[in-house]
Image 1 (tube, rainbow, N blue to C red):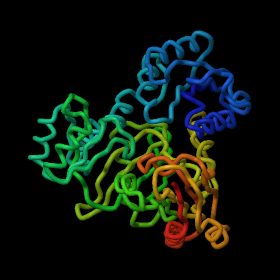
Image 2: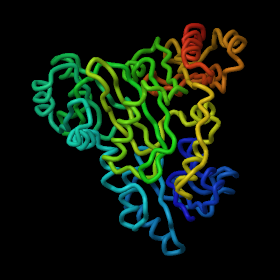
Image 3: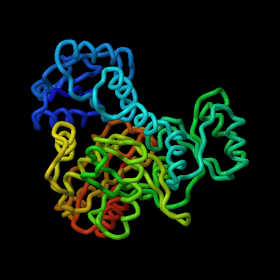
Length: 406
């Protein structure tokens, strides 16, 4: 099978998709923004061919490149795994008659108001939401729904560009911050109080082959706004427990309603006083290299599993559920430059057998802002057979490890 893969070099784990496609026998032509000379030796070895474009999100350039490859040889699949690449790849896929995620599905997984409306029409429980391109539309929604509200770009991923408004005064500030008063398109949503988590899958022709449930502590918006918090992501090894039956059923229903076929998915959900609520879904893997944790916790290579589904349409491997897995982000105490760490040797001695890997930028490294995400500064990743004990360990790491900056 000949697979075109969009952007093999950035972010860093994109190379693992190429590695996996090569490992399962695919002939891989990659399309990326870097010159071929910038690719490392392993990437060049895994590739059948490489095409450079100015931007992989520039649909005309991507279309010209794909058609040029088709003129040379048969193309079976065109695959993309980064949120911003999914819709351009779908448009080109459709124009070139290549099987894969449709434009409709890609659009609904990218445009948050359209996604929620399609699912509300199918009676999937969602927060109330709308799309807006003016301040008056936002104010009208607020008058109808009340506070708190969430505003974010229509095509956002995670908490990027997301704001919460508690009242009319805050709403006016958020309107200015998001530039909706100058016509910028935003999604406006009812804020759902409750625990925030996500359900990830690998699906083949719409059938879930691998599934994982993970939890945020605390929710993403709070985690990305509060310096003193060392936020955690934990994936459970109790996916088959009765408590998750409703989540798994919701995820399968969303996959069916949006027409997601052979793809990774990443679905956010909330559970609170109003019950289980769908938040949003992407037809892509989760961010911050969560697949690495899934693999280490379940004795799987998720990249190879994805490649097997793309190339062969099946896999016989199953998640072991031997471990729960998690990561903790460790923030510097201020913006500036890293000057040192406290408590690292202590936690390594106590929890070393459960530590998968860690990243501690060298002293002198400039700090990254809190909102830059879970892997922007220092972090640690662990696994443990017991989910509750792993959560306790991560709490203790958050209390003991201090990142000093000046």
